[in-house]
Image (cartoon, rainbow, N blue to C red; front, side, top):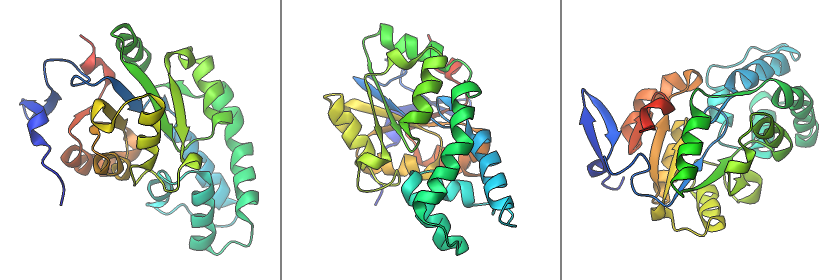
Length: 237
């Protein structure tokens, strides 16, 4: 049964906002997803999926990107092989994805609007900032450095470091531990439903972040998250 969560926000004009005591709801740390949350990168993966499956004579199923987003590369490769009956090994598929994505992250991927401003706002307030991501360090670290925000983060955790994907709380618990904090001392910002639910299960305060590539889930994200935003501008006072 989902725990009682709705006393943590207030409503204005039909929208749910965080309490007045602060955007971060009094938390000592905030854990951010990257793709679709801090990085405006989901279009890159949409194109990769289109090219990857197109080379094999397949259309991209409507639910494919949403299905693999919480999994990380290894689990996503296994899922892809099983779903489509491919003969390649997971390692071969991962290598193909790496080749397609590495240049885009190093040279193209930008931040979501006002993300840097909000991160610096948190930093000035002494709030610890961490990352929980399905992406690989060799991809996202160059993107964060090029966009000038790498030094704002305390640490990061990838799904490779934990037993299960983002639909479970493992990755958020590991990142909170790295930050020296308990789950109840942290907020988690995510843009996909399964990840919001995974963080919820660990006792984290959750904030849904709108991204056009998960718009089909947005109504459910609003229902399950403690709060939600369309833009980081809403959070900066």
